[in-house]
Image 1: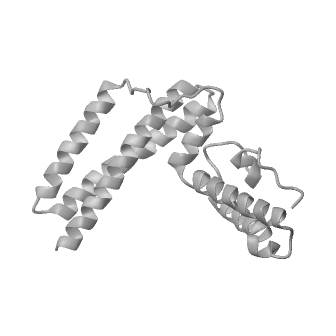
Image 2: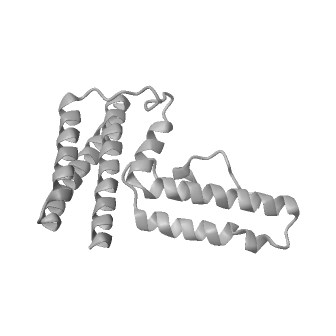
Length: 180
C-alpha cells in the first residue's frame, strides 16, 4: 500500500502515453492488474487506514478506467489536463454548418420514426452519423496532437452532439423494436 499515488493523471496510473489513441487491450490488462493488486478484499488483514486507502484507490482506478475507455470521455479528460478550461459551461459552438447538419439529422430522425421501412432508414441515418462521428474524432485527435486545444475543444463539442444523437437513435430503435 506504500506505492499508492493519488495525484497522478489517469494515463500515468495505467502506464500509458498521454494520447487520444490508446491501446484498449493494454488498458484492460493494466486495469485488471491494478484491480487484483489493490482490491479491498486483498487487504482484509491490513490496518483500517490501509483498507480505506485500498477502497479509495480502487475507486480512482475504476474512475480512470471508465474515463480512458470511452473515446468521448478520454477526449474530455485530455483537454482537462491542459491549463485552460476549454469546455466550461458558457462554451458555445460557432459552426453554423455543423449546427444546420444537426438540425437536418434531427428532422430526418423524426421522419425515420414515421417511415414504413424504418429499419433501412434508421440504418442509413445511423451509418451517416457514425461516419461523421469518426471524422470528428479524427479532427479532435489531429488538433490535439498539434496542441491546438481550442480547435480540439470545438471538435469535442461536436463529438458530444453526435454522441448524444447516436444514443437517441439507439433508444428510438429499442423503443420501436419493443413496440412491435
